[in-house]
Amino acid sequence: RFLVHMHEFMYACQHRTFLGNCENGRKDLAVARRKKALRTHFDSHAEDYRNPFYESSLSIMIFSVSTRSANIEVFAQFHSRWGGDGILPRESSEDAMVTLFNQIAVLQSTIAVMETRVGKGR
Image 1 (tube, rainbow, N blue to C red):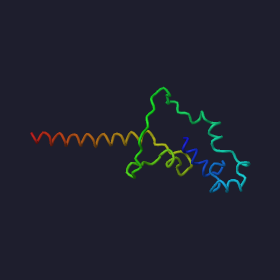
Image 2: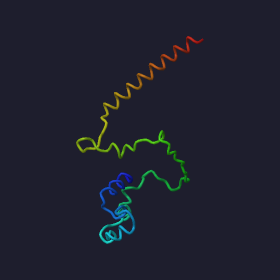
Image 3: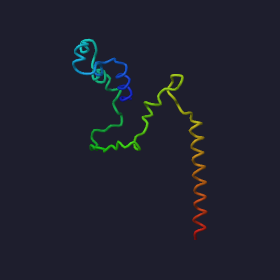
Image 4: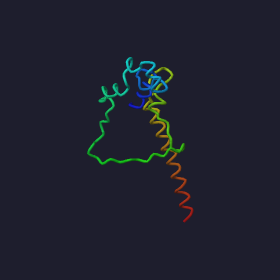
């Protein structure tokens, strides 16, 4: 949610953080007088962005991130957030169940074929 809101605020030009091409441009526009910093908004709404599952007592782990194109996935919460009617898209539970049952059927037939092949190999 934090990243989605940051993106929306950035393109909405509601905060001075992303206005102007450089510091001189922001000074010329007197942005500091007319707009709040985005950090001010996030600081005042910190509870909305707090992770309820975070435990500070756990050890800190630093993950290395691969930027190879094969490892990049769509940020579905951002890219798939609006349907044609302006409502957040939701997959119906019936569609999810049908998809799941179809996947199970494919896996079961694959298992049967593999068991047949293993049986013939003996």
